[in-house]
Length: 95
Image 1 (cartoon, rainbow, N blue to C red):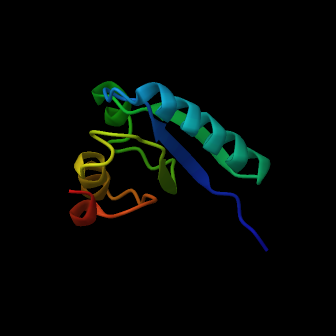
Image 2 (cartoon, rainbow, N blue to C red):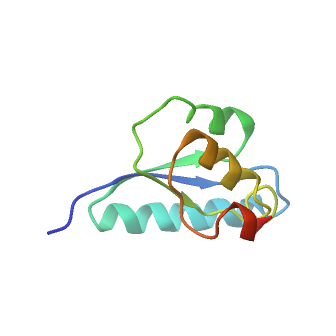
């Protein structure tokens, strides 16, 4: 039996590849919703990521990031500090 998860899809940000990241994020969000999960998009900028501090409404962060800071360990490190599990490679592998 499957249980719906509350998933934040992190995309966009300051990377030159942010537009494609947003498209990827939207596709991931749509697929997660179709599978019965609760999913929402979050912009990978300082104000967007700051909303995750102290928040416990998400079970998982799905990283739909391209380029820095999503592929260099920065976002992974932040998520580890706040204790939110995430998809993809860990901090050290990303760095």
